[in-house]
Structure formats: C-alpha cells, structure tokens
Length: 303
Length: 225
Ligand SMILES: Nc1ncnc2c1ncn2[C@@H]1O[C@H](COP(=O)(O)OP(=O)(O)O)[C@@H](O)[C@H]1O
Ligand SMILES: [Mg+2]
Image 1: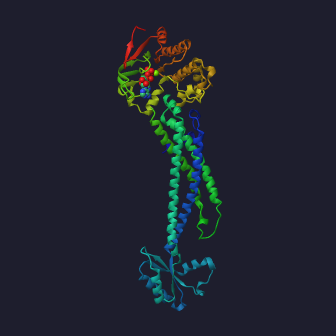
Image 2 (image 1 turned 90 degrees about the horizontal axis):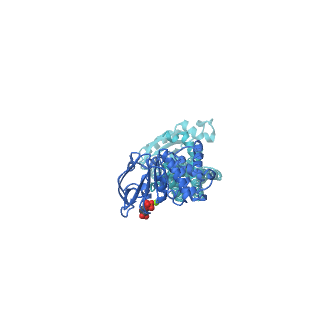
C-alpha cells in the first residue's frame, strides 16, 4: 500500500523514462482513440452521476416526508377541543396500520406556523386546529376506512394524507438513482473494453519492438510499463476533459425552481460537486488495469 | 559456464538435436559449425533461454534454465551478449540508441554511460555513424553495431550467430579480430558459422575448439580443418 502511494514512484510514472519512451514508438491512431473514448465516456458518466445523485437526493427526501406523512387535524370550538382530540386518539388506537399517533404540542405547532406568521404570533388568541401526527405501520393504512370512522365518531377531525401520492414517485426516484449508478458501471466497462482493444492494437503494432527489448534483457514489467503509462495518462487526460465539459453542461442546465420540478433539480449540490472529480481517476484506473492485462497476455506468448 | 547434459530439442516434428552433452568453460573460444539447417541457431537460442530444451538439462552460470522465471531469463540475458543472425535492431532509433538498448532496459541511465558508449562506437568503427538509423547502415556496419550492442553490458558470454554472414573477407577479419580481443579479455565466445576460412584464420590467433553439428549430434571436429 505504501508503495502504491510512494510519491517518487508516482512522479516517476507520470514523467516516465524518456529512453524507454523512445524505444516504443507512439502509435497515433490508438492514442487518439483512447483520448476520444475516455473523453466521451467521462462526459456521459457526468450525466449518469448527476442523475443518480439528484434522484437519490429526491428519493431520500420524499421517503422522509412519507414517514410522517399523515396527520389528523381537529377543528372544534375551544370547549370541545380536548374531548374531540381524545376521541380521535381512541379511534386511531384501534385502527389497524397505525404504528403510533401523537398529539403535537403547542410549541411544535407554533414552529410549523412560524414560516407563515412569524415567531411572535399569539397562538392562544387564534382558533388553531389541533394536529395529531400519525406514523404508518409497515402493513399500510386504509385511509378511506379511517376517514369514514372519523366522520362518524369525531365530527371535527379531518385525515390529511396528501403526501401519500408521492410513495410510488419516491420508489421511482430510488430506481432511477440505481439505474444511474448502473449506467456508470456500464460506461466504465465499455471504456475498459475500448482501451483493451486499443492497447492490443498498440501491442500488435509493436511486436518487433517488444521482441527486441525482450532479447536484450528487458523484464516484462519494464516493457508493459511503457504501454501502461501511455494509456493511463491518455485516459486520464481524455476523461478530465470530458468531465469538465460534462460539468459545464450540467451547470448550464436551465435552473427551474421549486419542489415539484425534477428535471430542474438535476445536478449536484454541496459536497456532491466533488463526485465528478472521481471520474478521471477511475478512468485512469480502468486504463491502467486494462493495459496491464493486455500487456501481460501479449508478453506471455513471448519468451 | 555453459553446460549441456543430454539436451534434446525438437520444434515439434521430429527431434532436431539430441543427446547433446558438452561443457563450455569460462574463457573458452568455440566455433559451432555444420550445414545450413543443422541447428546452429537453435543451439544458440537454447544457450540464451529463447528456447527451452525439450529434454535434458542446460545450465548457464550454474543455474538450470528451466528453473528460471521470466524475470530470471531477462536477468540472465544481461550477462550474455548475443549477435543475432538477423541483427534485430529497432529501425526507428539511431544506431547509438540501439547499441545502448540493453543499458536502457536494465535501468541504467544513458547519461552516465556516455563515455562507455562512445568508446564502444570507436572500437567498432562506428563513431561517425552514431546517429544513422539501422536501415541506413551497410551489412558490415550493422554486424559491428550488433557486436557493440552485445558487449555493452560487459557480458561474460558472447554468442554470435553467423556474424560474418554477408561480409566480405576484409570486414570478416575485422569482426573476428574484435571477437578475439574480447576472448583475450576473458570472455567466453561461441561463434556459429559455416565459413571455414574464418575458422582457419581464427586458429592462428586464438586457441579455438570447433564443434560440428551433424546428424542431430555435436562432435568435436579435429585436425581435418
Ligand atoms: N521456429 C521454428 N519452427 C519450426 N522449425 C524451425 C524453427 N526454426 C528453425 N526451424 C527448423 O530447424 C532446423 C534448424 O534450424 P536452424 O537452427 O536455424 O539451423 P542453422 O542455424 O544451423 O541453419 C531447420 O530445418 C529449420 O527449418
Ligand atoms: Mg542459423
């Protein structure tokens, strides 16, 4: 592990051995193919990443809201408030599918209203409905049945489960996020395949060079490194360019506002802006592995 | 230095060499002769690990070649200088870089070996041709360059495969002289050739043994030369 992060080795790898570089002549076609493929794949990866991150964020937020989605609101004259609240609680306690029901305190209610009325609102002076928060059990709540029971037994109670419609959406967002990650895996798999092709072409074009180097005492690692280094740096560069272009494209996405807009929400927020930086590193890693494997395979056929 | 014990080799269809038992001591000078297709090149390839014996044991520097891994073979080749029959240059590199290639691939810095390299270029008479590409050289120049590359690592063994193959008499004599010089410095020299004139000329300068490959066997050729 320490070896892997040895700064001398890393700078050595980047600068390279000028003599070794000259021994293996550059092949323009494979070089251009690698840079281009890495750039395109990185560009696509940025979008897949943006999709995953935003869909993940959305799905998480919606799921959180779902957990405390239902409330019972009781509007009654001040004198009856206490009695109706107790009656509603009694109904909720005997309703299947409810994990817990809790009467919100004045403090909590005040907090909920604060965004609209400011902190200094005289709550006692206003006829504010009492809220009961319901946490749904896993088995699910039959909202219609509950509504009918409340109608019969607590006239002032209204069941509010408006955010329930989001449940399938939250699931869809979760799936979308997964598909985004899966696409990233596919993108890197294709990148690996293309680099393997390009590396094989370069190795085949340099068969004579490899034979001669081997004959004069070059070790496999030395010969392989000339190829591995090139393909890694090309992929790193190509992917960096593609990544930057991709991020610019995401930044330039027209910003829409609001909760509901999913498309306008596509992008990175806060620390997730760092995610795209991983793409070139990953591309370099993929190129390193693919070229190393291709070189080993070629060299094994040679004594 | 080089020891063969019951070594056999076949490319797959029938045995090309069989029952080879010989010992080439350090500092010796050997010719390897025999008709074309007898297996001279094959025997030399066995001696630097490009081929592995299909039977028997071949020891180089007291190591069985079969026990060496790929890096071991690479290390071994740094101690054995080979003049290949077809020279084997990198055509896109100047001849000086080709000569220095064994140094490069074994991790030596060329800069620190510059004196060594230019001395070697003068020794083989290629000082003025240092920056020429291999295809621009004459046959004689290529052979001398191949010899220079073979000795740049100061190897203990020098194997030369038909080093005078397409050279005129005078040029052959010059190359032979270089090989004799190396032998006088203590190197073990093996030259594959079917040029009897070359062998006769050598015998006047150095104590050389002649090995002849015939009918899949190697015999010590005697006074008939
Ligand atoms: N790679 C190979 N595969 C199959 N046969 C080979 C190969 N190399 C050489 N031969 C055969 O082995 C025989 C000996 O070849 P070689 O050692 O080059 O002979 P020499 O150098 O004495 O002329 C020849 O008949 C040649 O055709
Ligand atoms: Mg031959």
